[in-house]
Image (cartoon, one colour):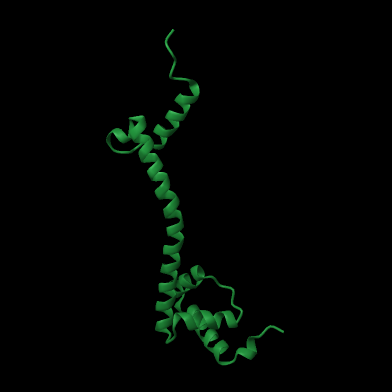
Amino acid sequence: MARVKNTPVTRRRRKKILKLAKGYFGSKSTLYRTAHEQVMRALQYAYRDRKQNKRNFRRLWISRINAGAVQNGFKYSKLIHGLSLANVQLNRKVLADLAISEPTVFASYVELAKDAIANPAKYQVK
């Protein structure tokens, strides 16, 4: 009797890969071997880019905060230092959003940071 090469486990595994390869161009979506190669590469890219996405957004937020700080006559590094001295717990995402959507509120945070740098004893927690 001939050897059976299409066991349920193998079929399930191959169908899973072909399902992940749905929408790929040409034989990459129909042939198991090329689909498997493409899916593995795509998963590697997805893993890498999930990390890079975080870095890219942080860079974007920092550049937006810096632009808002420069408009108010301040630098990004001094702003962050002043806000930490003033015990302000806003993250960069929120600060960047404030710099774009609420410039007056952002300007008040810049003034707070300037004051905290000028008078650090005023903001120390006792």
